[in-house]
Each structure stands twice: as C-alpha cells, then as structure tokens.
Image (cartoon, rainbow, N blue to C red; front, side):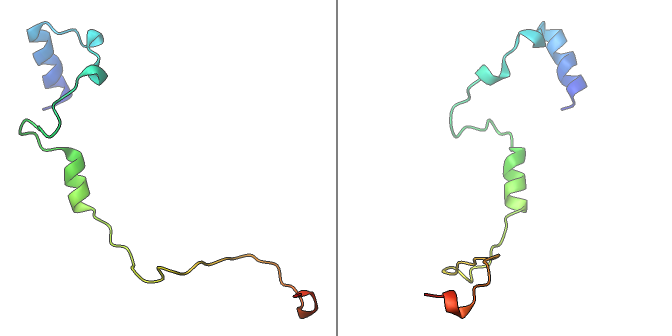
Amino acid sequence: MADVDIDARAALLGIDWSQVNLDSIQLPPGNDFGIESDDEAVYHDDQLEFDSGFGNIIVVDNLPVVPKSKFE
C-alpha cells in the first residue's frame, strides 16, 4: 500500500497522523496478522556463508622486527 493510499484512508477515517505515536503500538509476540515482514524476506535471501577454517588461529600483524640479540 502506497503512502498516498495510507494518507487518503487515514483522512477518510478522520485520523490525524501528527497525533499518532507509532512507537507506542505493541503487537502480540509471534502474531504477524498475515503480513510478511520485509526483514524476514531479506534474512532468508541474504544468508551469509562463513569459512569454517582457521577457527583456532590468531594473526598478529605490524610487530616490530627485533634482532636475535634482543630475544632474551
């Protein structure tokens, strides 16, 4: 539904959007009222695959070069 359609429907119902606090609306958990979430579609489409190798490796870079005489 487009914003224009929503605004027109709200005007027909006498709803003043400036008085509506959308953050105060709480829906029951687990009930989507038959509306598919955009987030769920993105989540299912873009699942990332990670490499499982090098699980126990730590790489330390940019350490200074120290001559053998200073090792101790």
